Image (cartoon, rainbow, N blue to C red; front, top):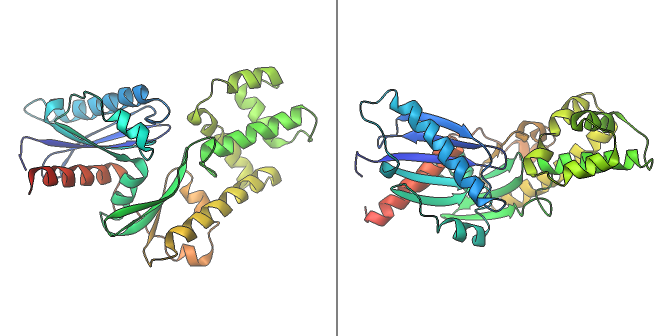
Length: 299
Protein backbone atom coordinates (compact mmCIF):
# COMPACT_ATOMS: atom_id res chain seq x y z
CA UNK A 1 0.00 0.00 0.00
CA UNK A 2 1.26 3.46 -0.93
CA UNK A 3 3.13 5.29 1.80
CA UNK A 4 1.62 8.51 0.40
CA UNK A 5 -1.79 7.49 1.70
CA UNK A 6 -3.18 8.33 5.12
CA UNK A 7 -5.98 6.55 6.92
CA UNK A 8 -8.84 8.13 8.84
CA UNK A 9 -11.22 6.24 11.08
CA UNK A 10 -14.56 7.83 11.93
CA UNK A 11 -16.78 6.98 14.88
CA UNK A 12 -19.97 8.90 14.16
CA UNK A 13 -22.82 8.63 16.65
CA UNK A 14 -25.96 10.49 17.57
CA UNK A 15 -24.09 13.06 19.66
CA UNK A 16 -20.45 13.20 18.52
CA UNK A 17 -18.21 12.41 15.57
CA UNK A 18 -14.63 11.39 16.33
CA UNK A 19 -11.84 11.15 13.76
CA UNK A 20 -8.46 9.40 14.04
CA UNK A 21 -5.70 10.03 11.49
CA UNK A 22 -2.90 7.52 10.94
CA UNK A 23 -0.08 7.12 8.45
CA UNK A 24 0.32 3.93 6.39
CA UNK A 25 2.31 2.32 9.22
CA UNK A 26 -0.49 2.84 11.75
CA UNK A 27 1.14 5.71 13.63
CA UNK A 28 -1.36 8.09 15.21
CA UNK A 29 -0.93 11.57 13.71
CA UNK A 30 -3.96 13.52 14.86
CA UNK A 31 -7.50 13.40 16.22
CA UNK A 32 -10.61 15.59 16.01
CA UNK A 33 -14.11 15.71 17.51
CA UNK A 34 -17.23 17.31 16.09
CA UNK A 35 -21.03 17.09 16.27
CA UNK A 36 -23.67 14.41 15.48
CA UNK A 37 -23.20 12.02 12.55
CA UNK A 38 -26.34 9.88 12.18
CA UNK A 39 -26.90 9.44 8.44
CA UNK A 40 -30.42 8.11 8.93
CA UNK A 41 -31.53 11.28 10.75
CA UNK A 42 -29.56 13.94 8.87
CA UNK A 43 -27.00 12.89 6.27
CA UNK A 44 -25.99 16.48 5.48
CA UNK A 45 -25.23 17.17 9.13
CA UNK A 46 -23.30 13.89 9.27
CA UNK A 47 -21.17 14.98 6.29
CA UNK A 48 -20.50 18.36 7.89
CA UNK A 49 -19.56 16.74 11.21
CA UNK A 50 -17.25 14.28 9.46
CA UNK A 51 -15.48 17.01 7.50
CA UNK A 52 -15.13 19.15 10.62
CA UNK A 53 -13.68 16.30 12.71
CA UNK A 54 -11.34 15.30 9.87
CA UNK A 55 -10.17 18.89 9.40
CA UNK A 56 -9.36 19.12 13.09
CA UNK A 57 -7.43 15.84 12.97
CA UNK A 58 -5.46 16.94 9.92
CA UNK A 59 -4.78 20.36 11.42
CA UNK A 60 -3.33 18.80 14.55
CA UNK A 61 -1.23 16.45 12.41
CA UNK A 62 0.02 19.15 10.07
CA UNK A 63 1.60 21.04 12.94
CA UNK A 64 3.94 18.05 13.30
CA UNK A 65 4.44 17.23 9.61
CA UNK A 66 6.81 18.68 7.06
CA UNK A 67 4.21 18.48 4.28
CA UNK A 68 0.53 19.36 4.57
CA UNK A 69 -1.87 16.40 4.36
CA UNK A 70 -4.60 16.76 1.73
CA UNK A 71 -8.04 15.13 1.80
CA UNK A 72 -7.30 13.43 -1.54
CA UNK A 73 -4.54 11.47 0.22
CA UNK A 74 -6.92 10.11 2.84
CA UNK A 75 -8.59 6.70 2.84
CA UNK A 76 -11.59 7.08 5.13
CA UNK A 77 -13.34 4.31 7.03
CA UNK A 78 -16.57 5.81 8.36
CA UNK A 79 -18.43 4.00 11.13
CA UNK A 80 -21.69 5.94 11.20
CA UNK A 81 -24.93 5.69 13.13
CA UNK A 82 -27.74 4.83 10.73
CA UNK A 83 -25.47 3.01 8.26
CA UNK A 84 -27.09 -0.27 9.30
CA UNK A 85 -30.17 0.91 7.36
CA UNK A 86 -29.45 -0.05 3.75
CA UNK A 87 -31.37 2.83 2.18
CA UNK A 88 -29.58 5.45 4.30
CA UNK A 89 -26.19 3.92 3.51
CA UNK A 90 -26.92 3.79 -0.23
CA UNK A 91 -27.89 7.46 -0.31
CA UNK A 92 -24.83 8.47 1.72
CA UNK A 93 -22.50 6.55 -0.57
CA UNK A 94 -23.59 8.69 -3.54
CA UNK A 95 -21.75 11.61 -1.91
CA UNK A 96 -19.09 13.14 -4.17
CA UNK A 97 -16.56 13.24 -1.36
CA UNK A 98 -13.08 14.81 -1.49
CA UNK A 99 -11.21 11.76 -0.17
CA UNK A 100 -9.01 9.19 -1.90
CA UNK A 101 -11.73 6.67 -1.05
CA UNK A 102 -14.60 6.28 1.43
CA UNK A 103 -15.69 3.01 3.02
CA UNK A 104 -18.91 3.14 5.06
CA UNK A 105 -20.06 0.77 7.79
CA UNK A 106 -22.23 1.20 10.86
CA UNK A 107 -20.81 2.66 14.05
CA UNK A 108 -21.71 -0.62 15.75
CA UNK A 109 -19.68 -2.70 13.31
CA UNK A 110 -16.68 -0.36 13.57
CA UNK A 111 -16.87 -0.58 17.34
CA UNK A 112 -17.02 -4.39 17.27
CA UNK A 113 -14.03 -4.66 14.92
CA UNK A 114 -12.05 -2.30 17.13
CA UNK A 115 -13.07 -3.96 20.38
CA UNK A 116 -11.83 -7.38 19.27
CA UNK A 117 -9.07 -6.20 16.91
CA UNK A 118 -10.82 -7.81 13.95
CA UNK A 119 -11.28 -11.16 15.71
CA UNK A 120 -14.61 -12.88 16.42
CA UNK A 121 -16.61 -11.40 19.25
CA UNK A 122 -19.74 -9.55 20.31
CA UNK A 123 -20.30 -5.90 21.13
CA UNK A 124 -23.10 -3.78 22.51
CA UNK A 125 -23.17 -0.02 22.06
CA UNK A 126 -25.21 1.78 24.69
CA UNK A 127 -24.92 5.53 24.48
CA UNK A 128 -27.24 7.95 22.71
CA UNK A 129 -28.64 4.87 20.95
CA UNK A 130 -28.42 1.14 21.58
CA UNK A 131 -27.59 -1.88 19.41
CA UNK A 132 -25.64 -5.11 19.49
CA UNK A 133 -23.77 -7.34 17.05
CA UNK A 134 -21.60 -10.43 16.87
CA UNK A 135 -18.76 -10.83 14.34
CA UNK A 136 -18.74 -14.50 13.31
CA UNK A 137 -17.34 -16.21 10.20
CA UNK A 138 -16.52 -12.83 8.64
CA UNK A 139 -20.12 -11.62 8.93
CA UNK A 140 -22.04 -9.41 11.35
CA UNK A 141 -25.29 -10.52 12.98
CA UNK A 142 -27.13 -7.58 14.55
CA UNK A 143 -29.72 -7.21 17.29
CA UNK A 144 -31.63 -3.96 17.84
CA UNK A 145 -30.35 -0.71 16.39
CA UNK A 146 -33.72 0.13 14.83
CA UNK A 147 -33.48 3.82 15.67
CA UNK A 148 -35.19 6.20 18.03
CA UNK A 149 -38.03 6.39 18.96
CA UNK A 150 -39.22 2.99 17.68
CA UNK A 151 -36.05 1.24 18.89
CA UNK A 152 -32.88 2.01 20.86
CA UNK A 153 -34.41 0.88 24.14
CA UNK A 154 -32.27 1.50 27.24
CA UNK A 155 -30.29 4.18 25.41
CA UNK A 156 -29.67 7.71 26.57
CA UNK A 157 -32.33 8.98 24.15
CA UNK A 158 -34.83 6.41 25.43
CA UNK A 159 -34.11 7.25 29.07
CA UNK A 160 -34.49 10.97 28.40
CA UNK A 161 -37.79 10.44 26.60
CA UNK A 162 -39.13 8.30 29.46
CA UNK A 163 -38.12 11.02 31.90
CA UNK A 164 -39.99 13.69 29.92
CA UNK A 165 -43.09 11.47 29.63
CA UNK A 166 -42.99 10.90 33.39
CA UNK A 167 -42.64 14.64 33.99
CA UNK A 168 -45.70 15.39 31.86
CA UNK A 169 -47.73 12.85 33.84
CA UNK A 170 -46.69 14.61 37.03
CA UNK A 171 -47.57 18.05 35.68
CA UNK A 172 -50.96 16.71 34.57
CA UNK A 173 -51.42 15.60 38.21
CA UNK A 174 -51.70 11.97 37.14
CA UNK A 175 -48.69 11.15 39.29
CA UNK A 176 -47.18 12.97 42.26
CA UNK A 177 -44.43 15.49 41.56
CA UNK A 178 -41.16 13.78 42.46
CA UNK A 179 -37.42 14.34 42.24
CA UNK A 180 -37.18 13.22 38.60
CA UNK A 181 -39.92 15.59 37.44
CA UNK A 182 -38.30 18.41 39.39
CA UNK A 183 -34.89 17.71 37.80
CA UNK A 184 -36.31 17.58 34.28
CA UNK A 185 -38.24 20.83 34.75
CA UNK A 186 -35.04 22.42 36.00
CA UNK A 187 -33.07 21.15 32.99
CA UNK A 188 -35.73 22.44 30.58
CA UNK A 189 -36.03 25.69 32.56
CA UNK A 190 -39.81 25.46 32.79
CA UNK A 191 -42.61 23.65 34.56
CA UNK A 192 -45.18 24.69 31.97
CA UNK A 193 -46.59 21.78 29.97
CA UNK A 194 -46.93 23.76 26.74
CA UNK A 195 -43.36 24.98 26.97
CA UNK A 196 -42.09 21.44 27.47
CA UNK A 197 -44.11 20.13 24.51
CA UNK A 198 -42.83 22.99 22.34
CA UNK A 199 -39.22 22.30 23.29
CA UNK A 200 -39.52 18.57 22.67
CA UNK A 201 -41.00 19.19 19.22
CA UNK A 202 -37.54 20.39 18.18
CA UNK A 203 -35.59 17.66 20.02
CA UNK A 204 -33.30 15.17 18.35
CA UNK A 205 -31.81 12.07 19.98
CA UNK A 206 -28.90 13.95 21.56
CA UNK A 207 -31.27 16.42 23.24
CA UNK A 208 -33.09 13.59 25.02
CA UNK A 209 -29.82 11.81 25.82
CA UNK A 210 -28.50 14.99 27.47
CA UNK A 211 -31.22 14.64 30.12
CA UNK A 212 -29.54 11.49 31.48
CA UNK A 213 -27.12 13.85 33.21
CA UNK A 214 -30.04 14.86 35.45
CA UNK A 215 -31.00 11.24 36.08
CA UNK A 216 -27.70 9.67 37.13
CA UNK A 217 -27.43 11.43 40.54
CA UNK A 218 -30.95 10.20 41.31
CA UNK A 219 -30.01 6.67 40.21
CA UNK A 220 -27.01 6.66 42.56
CA UNK A 221 -29.28 7.98 45.32
CA UNK A 222 -31.58 4.99 44.65
CA UNK A 223 -34.52 7.12 43.56
CA UNK A 224 -37.40 4.69 42.96
CA UNK A 225 -38.66 6.14 39.67
CA UNK A 226 -35.24 6.47 38.06
CA UNK A 227 -34.09 3.07 39.34
CA UNK A 228 -37.15 1.45 37.75
CA UNK A 229 -36.31 2.99 34.35
CA UNK A 230 -32.70 1.80 34.48
CA UNK A 231 -33.80 -1.66 35.60
CA UNK A 232 -36.15 -1.87 32.61
CA UNK A 233 -33.33 -0.79 30.33
CA UNK A 234 -30.91 -3.24 31.94
CA UNK A 235 -33.33 -6.14 31.45
CA UNK A 236 -33.42 -5.34 27.73
CA UNK A 237 -29.62 -5.16 27.44
CA UNK A 238 -29.33 -8.47 29.33
CA UNK A 239 -31.67 -10.13 26.81
CA UNK A 240 -29.68 -8.63 23.96
CA UNK A 241 -26.42 -9.98 25.41
CA UNK A 242 -27.91 -13.44 25.86
CA UNK A 243 -29.14 -13.44 22.28
CA UNK A 244 -25.74 -12.41 20.90
CA UNK A 245 -23.81 -14.98 22.94
CA UNK A 246 -26.25 -17.90 22.81
CA UNK A 247 -24.59 -19.80 19.97
CA UNK A 248 -20.94 -18.90 20.65
CA UNK A 249 -18.34 -18.75 23.40
CA UNK A 250 -17.11 -15.34 22.22
CA UNK A 251 -16.24 -12.42 24.51
CA UNK A 252 -18.52 -9.39 24.85
CA UNK A 253 -17.37 -5.77 24.78
CA UNK A 254 -19.57 -3.00 26.15
CA UNK A 255 -19.11 0.40 24.49
CA UNK A 256 -20.64 3.83 25.05
CA UNK A 257 -21.40 6.31 27.79
CA UNK A 258 -23.89 4.07 29.62
CA UNK A 259 -21.95 0.81 29.28
CA UNK A 260 -20.45 0.92 32.78
CA UNK A 261 -23.83 1.72 34.31
CA UNK A 262 -25.65 -1.19 32.68
CA UNK A 263 -22.79 -3.69 33.09
CA UNK A 264 -23.39 -3.70 36.84
CA UNK A 265 -26.88 -5.15 36.26
CA UNK A 266 -25.73 -8.15 34.21
CA UNK A 267 -26.20 -11.74 35.36
CA UNK A 268 -23.05 -13.54 36.48
CA UNK A 269 -22.98 -15.59 33.25
CA UNK A 270 -22.86 -12.43 31.11
CA UNK A 271 -20.40 -10.66 33.42
CA UNK A 272 -18.04 -13.60 32.95
CA UNK A 273 -17.92 -12.89 29.19
CA UNK A 274 -17.10 -9.19 29.48
CA UNK A 275 -13.74 -7.98 28.16
CA UNK A 276 -12.08 -4.61 27.76
CA UNK A 277 -11.91 -3.17 24.24
CA UNK A 278 -8.61 -3.82 22.49
CA UNK A 279 -8.96 -0.74 20.29
CA UNK A 280 -11.33 2.15 19.59
CA UNK A 281 -14.19 2.26 17.07
CA UNK A 282 -12.07 4.67 15.02
CA UNK A 283 -9.34 2.02 14.80
CA UNK A 284 -12.00 -0.53 13.87
CA UNK A 285 -13.11 1.73 11.02
CA UNK A 286 -9.50 2.03 9.81
CA UNK A 287 -9.18 -1.77 9.97
CA UNK A 288 -12.24 -2.01 7.71
CA UNK A 289 -10.95 0.65 5.29
CA UNK A 290 -7.55 -1.02 4.97
CA UNK A 291 -9.15 -4.40 4.30
CA UNK A 292 -11.33 -2.80 1.61
CA UNK A 293 -8.26 -1.16 0.02
CA UNK A 294 -6.34 -4.43 -0.05
CA UNK A 295 -9.35 -6.15 -1.60
CA UNK A 296 -9.77 -3.50 -4.29
CA UNK A 297 -6.06 -3.68 -5.17
CA UNK A 298 -6.06 -7.47 -5.10
CA UNK A 299 -3.32 -7.57 -2.46
